Amino acid sequence: MVPRIFAAIFIFELLGSNSEGVTDPRLWLCQPAPRCGEWTYNPLEQCCDDSVILDLNQTRLCGSSCTFWPCFQHCCLESLGSQNQTVVRFKIPGMKPDCKSSPITRICAQEYHAKSPVSRSDLI
Image 1 (cartoon, rainbow, N blue to C red):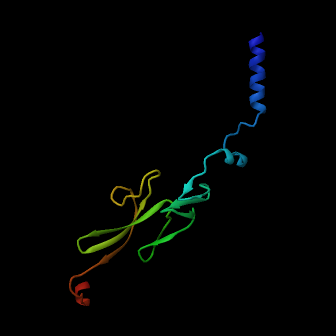
Image 2 (image 1 turned 45 degrees about the vertical axis):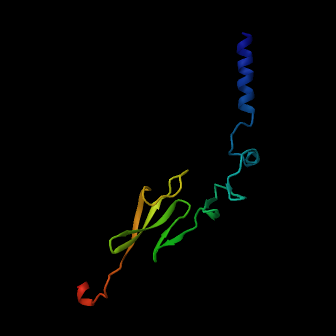
Image 3 (image 1 turned 90 degrees about the vertical axis):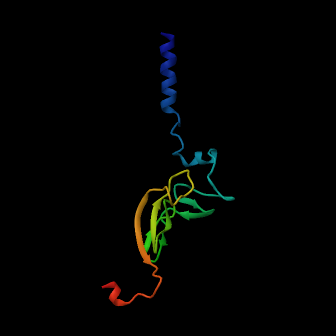
């Protein structure tokens, strides 16, 4: 009977305590803050990209007309013979961005580099 009373008191104390985890903003002070170079940042609102703190919703251009989110993606220039194309690839969390092995999000644009001037009749 005595162990049941202790168990009931223990459970009652747990239910009445403030054991919500890190969701309480006051507990952030007890957690190590992420760093970007020498600066700290809030990972719920920002990211660190090449030692620069960015807002999570910030976009950049990849090529001349393709936008991407530098917190989640990176822009790669890939060449196939005389063609260059800009490709947006996913960033893999915890790994350095890699244009060869990261999954492709989308192909943005292709640019053709002809060795000689191209006439209109070559395009038709």
